Amino acid sequence: MVKRLFDLMITIPMLLLVSPFFLIIALLIKLGSKGPVFYMQTRVGLNSRDFKIFKFRTMQMNADKGGLLTVGGRDPRVTPIGYFLRKYKLDELPQLLNVLFGSMSLVGPRPEVRKYVDLYNVEQQKVLSVKPGITDYASIEYSEENELLAKSNDPERTYIDEIMPAKLLLNQKYIAEKSLTTDIKIIWLTFKKIISH
Image 1 (cartoon, rainbow, N blue to C red):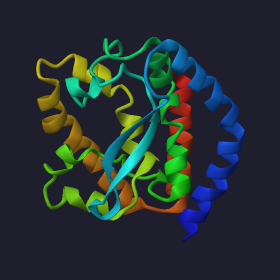
Image 2 (tube, rainbow, N blue to C red):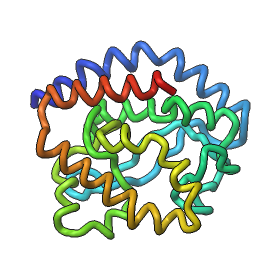
Image 3 (cartoon, rainbow, N blue to C red):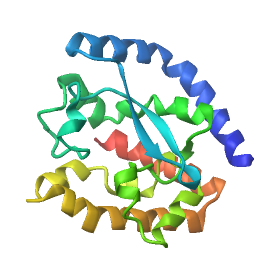
Image 4 (cartoon, helix red, strand yellow):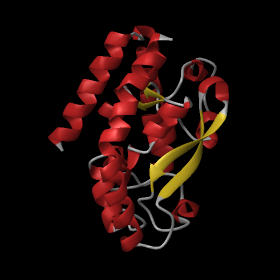
C-alpha cells in the first residue's frame, strides 16, 4: 500500500510535468517515420499475468518481426528520433501510464516478454512475485545492453545464456532488499546514469 502511494505521489506530478514533452515527442515521431506514436508490447507482469507496456515508438513499423532484441546503438531498424529517445531513455516515459493504471511500479524487475519468461527456472520465477518496474538494478547495470549484444556472434544466445541470468540475479537482490529506501536509491542511481550519458 505504501509503495503504491509512493508511486502515485511521484507519477501524477511527473505526468503533468512531462505532458508538454509528450506532445513534442509525439510530433517528432510522426514527422520522422510512418506509424503510431506509441508502441505497445505484451509483457509478463505480477503473478505471470500478461499486460501491455507503453513505449514511444522508436523503430520502423513491424521491426519486431526481425527479432525481439535490439542490437547495437545503430540498429538499422531504429529511427533517427528513436535513437535519441533510446539514448536518454525517453522512450520509457509512457510507462508512467502503466504505473498510473497499476500494471507497473516505478521500481521493480523490468518486465520480460513471454518467450524469455518461459525459460526461467523455478528460482528465477520468483521475480514474478513482485510488480514489474520502469527501472531496477539490472536497468542500471545493463544500460549498454544493446552494445554488448552487438559484439556477439549470436546475440539471442548471449542474452539467454549470459545477460538474462545476470539480470535476474540483480532482480532477486532487489526482492531481498525491497523497501521504500531501496526504491528511492534506485531512482536516484537511474537518474545519475541517464545524466552521465
